Length: 129
Image 1: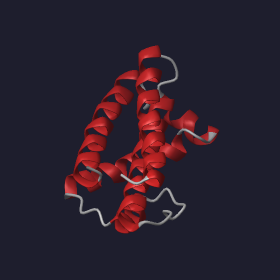
Image 2 (image 1 turned 180 degrees about the vertical axis):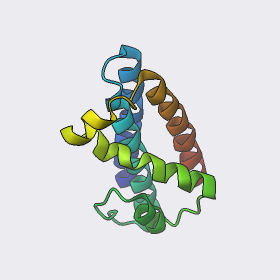
Image 3 (image 1 turned 90 degrees about the vertical axis):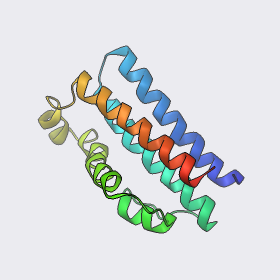
Image 4 (image 1 turned 90 degrees about the horizontal axis):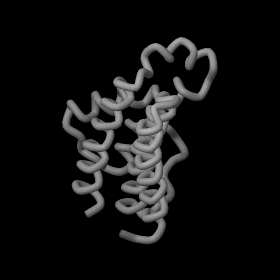
């Protein structure tokens, strides 16, 4: 992997590891949901940088990033990504977070983390190695 995508990959890996730490701490699991979204976004940006040799578009839109990276996702993985996307915003703004706090239970976020890690590994092995 080239040096520039390595930076994106390092950030993505850090976010995924931090999500796991948040869950182990059992406090504020909603941050794990946010970090899961960020890990996948940054991983896809690493793939864009590696495959296209250019800076990815500054967006949180997974469809746009996957198109830029020329990632061919199976339908189930694309559906999963579309479900992950809102966790970025939902955890950042108080009006959304207070509505969603009941959803962001420890159990929900642990499941989200497990699924995120599986998709992360699939993307990494399919497109970066």
